[in-house]
Image 1: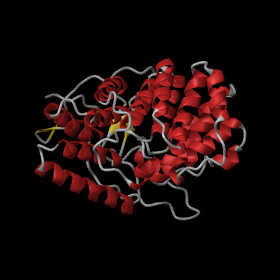
Image 2 (image 1 turned 90 degrees about the vertical axis):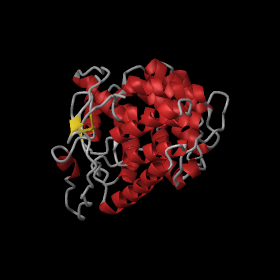
Image 3 (image 1 turned 30 degrees about the horizontal axis):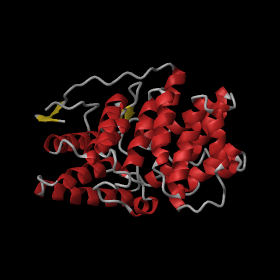
Image 4 (image 1 turned 120 degrees about the horizontal axis):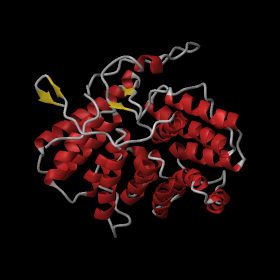
Length: 343
C-alpha cells in the first residue's frame, strides 16, 4: 500500500552532547541545517533528529531495537506492532511509526492502540486531519471501555500517571484540532479527555489544555471554574509539576520567573517535556492579555528549540504559523524512493 509521506527519513544516531557550563548550547542551530529530515512544519521547515544526549539516545535505541526484534519474530501479535510504532516516536522516527502501524492496522483493523499511535504519529508529522480520522477510529474502538489502558508497554512515568487510552485519545485529538485552528472542536475534545481523569495528575494535565482552549473558544466562565479547582497542595507526580505550575501561573499565584526561564532552553527530551509546557503557558497568557508582541516573541523562542515532537511545541508552532500567515493544509500524499526502497 502507499503511505502518506512527509519526507525521506533517516535513522542516524545523534552525537549531540549538552553544552558545558557557561557555554551556549548550539543544538538548535545545528538541527537547523544538519542531518536527514524527519518531518516538516506547516511552512516547510525541516524537522531533524532530536538532539538528545548520547546516553539517552542509546537507551531509546536499545529499547527500539528490542521492540523491532520482537516485532519481526511475532508478526501475528498485535502488541508487537503497537510497541514498535510507539518506540519509534521517541526518537522522532515518524514515518517508520506510520509504516509499521499501518501494517498492523491492515492485519488487525479493529485495534484501538494501532489507530491511536498512528494518530499520534500523524500529529507529530503535522498531518492533523489524517490524525483526527485515526484518533476518531481509536475512540470508537474503545467506546464503553472507560478504564482500558491499552496494550503497549508503559514507562515508569506512564504507570504513575495511569492515563486510560480514552483519556489519551481525546487529548491528542484536541491537539490535532487546535493545531488546525479549530478551537471549538479542540475544547470539546479536551473536555472529553478530562472526563476520563481519575487522579490529580490527569486532572492537572487536562486542565492545562482545557483552560487555554476554553478561553480561546469564549468559555471564560468554564475556564475560571477550572482555576478555582487548582491548588498548590494537589498531590501529583514530578512529571506533572509543570502543568500545575502553569495553572497556578494562569491563576496569578505564580510569577513568570518562578515558572520558567525562557533563556534556559532544554537539552534533552525530558527537559523539553517540562520546559515547553511552561513556556507555552507564558505565550498563552500573553495572548489572553492582548500582549501580541510578547506572545509572538515567546512563540519564536519555543519553535527555535529542536524538540519538535512535544505537544506544547506543536501547539506553539501552529500559533506561530497562524501569526505569520501560514494556513494549515493537509499534506499531499507522495511516495519517496531511496536506494531502490520505498521510504
